[in-house]
Image (cartoon, rainbow, N blue to C red; front, side, top):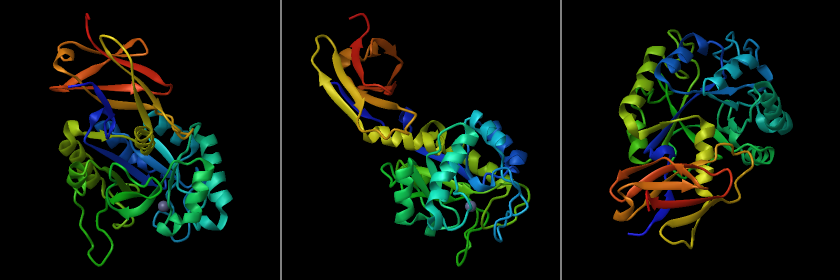
Length: 333
Ligand SMILES: [Zn+2]
């Protein structure tokens, strides 16, 4: 058996990935949903209507009129808790009608407000806000992905410009009016090594629209189902973490280098989009028996923690912000 290196589908060698998104980024999330996340140790992700940051919602005939959009300080508080923040456009209207404002200005103003990059766009309303002209503008402006309003999982090589979400709702729209299921799409994602991105707004004991949200006791059941079914197999992360990982995985170059008494490789990420921030990859490294007893993975001269996950297979998570030299050797050799 020779030494080979390939990136794991998901970080830490997990089998599937899970993210939960809250459209509109309503301050009322702090009442029930944020404490639930803290209790369970799961990060969330909010989708901000940038032109309405901090304002009481009054958008058309929205079910959530009267709720308040989070202000900058509340969004920064979530970031500090490990959450992610994305843009839900400027006005929650017709995005193509003013790409400069809805796409570019929204990104700049939100980045200024939260002091962090904004690379996720979530279509407001429905998929009429996923038109090619909008996607082109998102790419130009430095976004990395776009979330649709489509009930499905994402496969390991998804279209980052049309990511699906899973409807986490008390009762779906007609004609089927699907009832809530805490396990919805989770087994499907596990079997397909996929990625579930849940869609809801503001789980609470009272919700204004049963086809746009779940009750808080249902949402607790949902997150507990993710943890119970996922066990050691699920990677729970923000949209940005997962998208960064996919982009790094797709761009990994592995070059064997000549060496004696060890297997040495040059690793780098080629043509990675500049906005990608998390540049770590988990690597599966096949090793012969001689390297299994006390294996060491050395990256740029520094030992890197590696686990023998099964006979002949080492796993290590490696920082690749810069090109590195990775050596696999037996300790004491
Ligand atoms: Zn919305």
